[in-house]
Length: 141
Image (cartoon, rainbow, N blue to C red; front, side, top):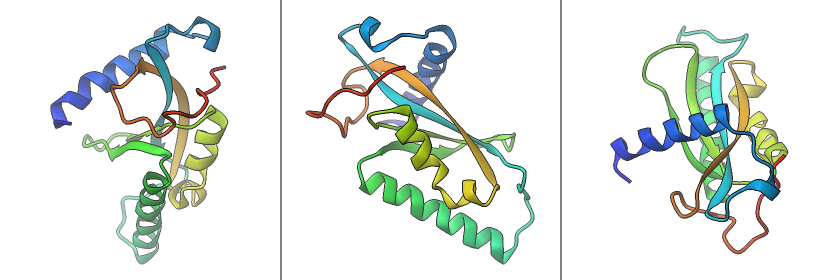
């Protein structure tokens, strides 16, 4: 997918999270739920280059790779503006609790370098890869 195509998807998703709270019973049939995570600077954040920071970052990237290979993580990446928001994650799991647990298992989150908040994100079906295709739909709350 072209890089410029992701921005409208992310903006639409954020707008859906902010302006809509839809239960599974109310979800239109052409929509589905992914879980949109925001990685932010944590209490142990530091821009200083240290061996410990390198180890944590290597663990962070390995965790994201493992989530991708497990079919749980659809999209992840850093934000380039050097603000408090450090990156985004999009999980496709059956529940928000599962997505939050997987994100919390990230070594950078465990170390307090990052914190993550997870939000249900309604998007049109077939816009993003769906590792749950053929499985039961996620449970929206």
